[in-house]
Image (tube, rainbow, N blue to C red):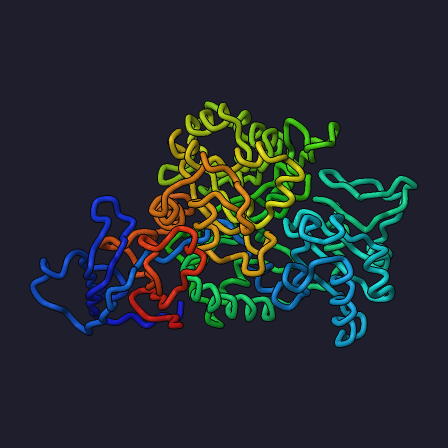
Length: 534
């Protein structure tokens, strides 16, 4: 981390929310060698030490922790076609954007896009290979759906990947065909990998530079600690890539979660790779139990609205979960499982119910997303010590698809945060960026607004019974996120912790809740040093 620690610095005149329940509010903080040496009220301070920084009466929060995101995907998305409003509102708009991209395209280079959501397209349907062929027939094209669990490719991409109408569906995936058996170009879940594996890969240096650049953007959102929930060992080892990104200027404390497919044949990790004091370290093993609600690949019960036979896609088994858990225990790291639908969540909880966790300083098992847990699943998860890492931005940004796929009433019961917390489950908020249909998917204040108002971006009701208060939402992005990610000495502004904190341009605890998404980060500090200023 390229932070130069100052010996002593005193911050005064702040409206500090510490996220420390023993001392939730303060006005003054002394930072010594990058850590908090004292925090409290100015009236209790005998004298100011070192440099003095006036916080000018502004609201201060601990640095935010995004407990589930995909930084490399997010960094690369900036170079791809953004298939979201306001740029793309129809398939015709998408075709136009692809054609524009073709004009500056290097010979043979793939055209990539991200973020389409058929619920936001005027046609109300997903694009197909024929739509993409109309834009460009001789250049391979791949457009990822907002959820990242589905992609559509053109005929050239299918040809290069060797996918024909006779190609069988891979385990845990589906190759869409029309009523005549013709390929539509839509690839669901593991079927996407048939194309991804033949696409040209960027070099480690190129990716590291992109991550370092992204780090500065994340600091502007107050995000001081991040995670990568799709880390790989091949063709580039993510640990080495992120360490190189640090050399290029990445400042965030970072936890990597490696995909089980990459580790199952060589599960044991070197101890220095999992040392949590390291800025970059491995924190867990990741599996997928299903897909997405908006893409209708979540493994649900009852089935999706109007599709009596469509229960989604199951993408793992009890045997795989147990094998991955054994490797996680051997390495003293977490088992992290993506699950959105009722059946996907129940598979995980039923597999581990009654079993003792192997970690003593945090949850051994995390369920990512947890969109539709049943009341019984919530109680059994609490009894087993399973944590939930969820994303309130989903129902905010993707309301059209949720209403269409689940119906009004079922949508309002998704992401039941109050029920999770009341049961005693450890819960953290996150963005899953860029895997949502929002132009700025990583913005934490959009997620906080969604959780506090339970209204979508268009004002639609997403479930008023599932609202939480602002302080609870902030805690789920700070203290609770630290307890689940296990990054040491962050998440609370307390003596002995790193002085990672943010200064806001508005008081998030006092403004109207419908204005929370207008809050901006004025300044971001790491180890007591100013690393971003608006």
